[in-house]
Length: 132
Image (cartoon, rainbow, N blue to C red; front, side):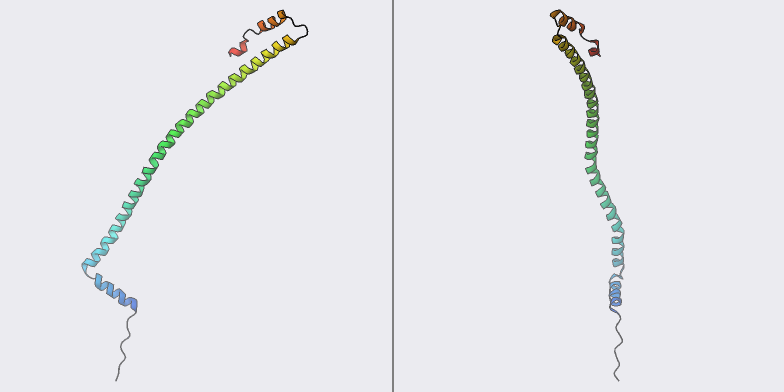
Protein backbone atom coordinates (compact mmCIF):
# COMPACT_ATOMS: atom_id res chain seq x y z
CA UNK A 1 0.00 0.00 0.00
CA UNK A 2 1.05 3.35 -0.82
CA UNK A 3 0.34 5.96 1.77
CA UNK A 4 0.00 9.64 1.01
CA UNK A 5 2.50 11.96 2.61
CA UNK A 6 1.24 14.02 5.53
CA UNK A 7 -0.03 17.46 4.54
CA UNK A 8 2.59 20.16 4.90
CA UNK A 9 2.07 22.97 7.41
CA UNK A 10 1.13 26.38 6.04
CA UNK A 11 4.02 28.51 4.90
CA UNK A 12 3.68 31.17 7.60
CA UNK A 13 3.89 28.49 10.30
CA UNK A 14 7.12 27.23 8.82
CA UNK A 15 8.59 30.75 8.65
CA UNK A 16 7.52 31.49 12.22
CA UNK A 17 9.07 28.26 13.49
CA UNK A 18 12.29 28.99 11.61
CA UNK A 19 12.53 32.51 13.07
CA UNK A 20 11.81 31.21 16.57
CA UNK A 21 14.47 28.54 16.09
CA UNK A 22 17.03 31.13 15.07
CA UNK A 23 16.09 33.51 17.84
CA UNK A 24 15.49 30.71 20.33
CA UNK A 25 18.87 31.23 21.80
CA UNK A 26 19.34 33.88 24.48
CA UNK A 27 21.47 35.94 22.16
CA UNK A 28 18.68 36.48 19.64
CA UNK A 29 16.17 37.49 22.29
CA UNK A 30 18.70 39.83 23.88
CA UNK A 31 19.29 41.48 20.51
CA UNK A 32 15.55 42.06 20.04
CA UNK A 33 15.21 43.46 23.55
CA UNK A 34 18.16 45.80 22.98
CA UNK A 35 16.65 47.13 19.74
CA UNK A 36 13.30 47.73 21.43
CA UNK A 37 14.91 49.56 24.36
CA UNK A 38 17.27 51.58 22.15
CA UNK A 39 14.39 52.66 19.94
CA UNK A 40 13.02 54.90 22.69
CA UNK A 41 16.48 56.37 23.28
CA UNK A 42 16.86 57.10 19.57
CA UNK A 43 13.53 58.97 19.61
CA UNK A 44 14.61 60.99 22.65
CA UNK A 45 17.96 61.85 21.04
CA UNK A 46 16.20 62.90 17.84
CA UNK A 47 13.80 65.10 19.84
CA UNK A 48 16.72 66.72 21.67
CA UNK A 49 18.53 67.40 18.40
CA UNK A 50 15.42 68.93 16.84
CA UNK A 51 14.83 71.08 19.93
CA UNK A 52 18.40 72.39 19.85
CA UNK A 53 18.13 73.18 16.15
CA UNK A 54 14.83 75.00 16.68
CA UNK A 55 16.25 77.08 19.54
CA UNK A 56 19.30 77.91 17.46
CA UNK A 57 17.03 79.25 14.74
CA UNK A 58 14.56 80.98 17.07
CA UNK A 59 17.05 82.91 19.25
CA UNK A 60 18.31 85.20 16.43
CA UNK A 61 14.72 85.81 15.39
CA UNK A 62 13.74 86.77 18.93
CA UNK A 63 16.71 89.14 19.10
CA UNK A 64 15.74 90.72 15.78
CA UNK A 65 12.11 91.06 16.89
CA UNK A 66 13.25 92.85 20.05
CA UNK A 67 15.37 95.22 17.96
CA UNK A 68 12.51 95.90 15.57
CA UNK A 69 10.10 96.56 18.44
CA UNK A 70 12.57 99.10 19.85
CA UNK A 71 12.93 100.75 16.45
CA UNK A 72 9.14 100.83 16.03
CA UNK A 73 8.75 102.48 19.45
CA UNK A 74 11.37 105.08 18.54
CA UNK A 75 9.73 105.71 15.19
CA UNK A 76 6.31 106.18 16.82
CA UNK A 77 7.78 108.57 19.36
CA UNK A 78 9.54 110.56 16.65
CA UNK A 79 6.36 110.57 14.57
CA UNK A 80 4.44 112.06 17.50
CA UNK A 81 7.08 114.79 17.88
CA UNK A 82 7.04 115.51 14.15
CA UNK A 83 3.23 115.72 14.10
CA UNK A 84 3.36 118.28 16.92
CA UNK A 85 5.95 120.29 15.00
CA UNK A 86 3.82 120.17 11.85
CA UNK A 87 0.80 121.39 13.83
CA UNK A 88 2.86 124.26 15.22
CA UNK A 89 4.16 125.17 11.78
CA UNK A 90 0.65 125.07 10.32
CA UNK A 91 -0.47 127.45 13.06
CA UNK A 92 2.42 129.83 12.29
CA UNK A 93 1.63 129.69 8.57
CA UNK A 94 -2.04 130.56 9.26
CA UNK A 95 -1.02 133.50 11.45
CA UNK A 96 1.48 134.78 8.88
CA UNK A 97 -1.05 134.36 6.07
CA UNK A 98 -3.59 136.49 8.00
CA UNK A 99 -0.90 139.11 8.64
CA UNK A 100 0.08 139.16 4.99
CA UNK A 101 -3.59 139.46 3.96
CA UNK A 102 -4.02 142.48 6.30
CA UNK A 103 -0.90 144.12 4.86
CA UNK A 104 -2.06 143.52 1.28
CA UNK A 105 -5.46 144.95 2.11
CA UNK A 106 -3.79 148.00 3.66
CA UNK A 107 -1.54 148.46 0.62
CA UNK A 108 -4.36 147.99 -1.92
CA UNK A 109 -6.89 150.13 -0.10
CA UNK A 110 -8.04 153.07 -2.27
CA UNK A 111 -7.15 155.52 0.48
CA UNK A 112 -3.77 153.86 1.25
CA UNK A 113 -0.97 156.10 2.35
CA UNK A 114 2.49 155.30 3.51
CA UNK A 115 1.53 156.37 7.02
CA UNK A 116 -1.53 154.00 7.07
CA UNK A 117 0.53 151.07 5.74
CA UNK A 118 3.20 151.70 8.37
CA UNK A 119 0.53 151.86 11.07
CA UNK A 120 -0.92 148.52 9.91
CA UNK A 121 2.52 146.91 9.94
CA UNK A 122 3.25 148.37 13.38
CA UNK A 123 -0.06 146.96 14.72
CA UNK A 124 0.99 143.46 13.73
CA UNK A 125 4.22 143.87 15.70
CA UNK A 126 4.92 140.19 16.49
CA UNK A 127 1.42 138.96 17.09
CA UNK A 128 1.26 137.21 20.48
CA UNK A 129 -0.48 134.24 18.85
CA UNK A 130 2.81 133.25 17.17
CA UNK A 131 4.67 132.88 20.47
CA UNK A 132 2.41 130.05 21.52
